[in-house]
Each structure stands twice: as C-alpha cells, then as structure tokens.
Length: 167
Image (cartoon, rainbow, N blue to C red):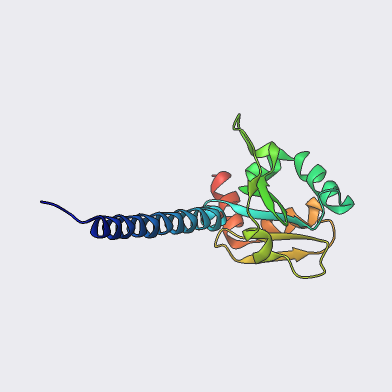
C-alpha cells in the first residue's frame, strides 16, 4: 500500500498529539496521588495516636525551638500517651526526631499541613489532636508539658487506657 507523504505526516502528528495527551494525563494522576499521600499523613494516626503539631512561620523562632526542646526531652511520656509530634513549617513538615526508631527522618516538602492549620499572622501555634482526629487544644504560645499531659490525662479514652494498664 502506498501512503502519500501528506497522509503520513498527518498520521504522525495525530499520534504525537495522543502521546502528549497521555503524558499530561499520567502527570496529572501522579500529582493527585502525591497530594493524597501528603494529606493522609495525619489521618493515618486516627484511633492510633494523638497528634501534636508544632506550627511556625520561621524555623528559627524562639517559641518553635523551645517547644521542640521540651518535647524532645520527654520521649517516654509522649510514647506512654500515644503522642506523635509533627514539626510544621510553611513549605515542609516532619515527625519529631525523638519518635523515630532508627528510621531516616527527612522533611516532606509540602505546604498542606501548614495551610490547613496556620492562620494568617500567627507566628507560632501548638495544636493537640485527639485519637478521633478532633482538635482538643490550641495555643499560640509554648505549651507546657503539664498542660499537655493534664489535658490528655483528663480525656475519657486516656483514663480508660490508664485504668486498663493498672489491671
């Protein structure tokens, strides 16, 4: 079969367009999957862990650094209360170092958690989320461990945990 040069060129152009559309489709799917993975980070803890977010506009913030130091000094108490702590900055977040067991702790580049929890003009915030994923406490100043543990220990689910532990 003999194909004219014009028809061959049109067919080639058509195939190239299909490939470009397929490439864009796969890129879009990849972006959606990556976004979904990032937004699932906090949901994965529901009914397993309480989550504390240390949110700051600036990594060098005095309050941010002080809060991290306080929590890093109490790994046993955090574990006992099933607390997972995230450090959250405008463009990235990670689990706090004291909570990793030999795992590599790298920043995850994504503004999603910051955008969900930071309010415009707030330099610093600490948020406690219960096992149900609901916000139980928000502070715009350094949260004392006494207040954090007191709030958690007063929760019905935590009281049940302590009661079962003592049996």
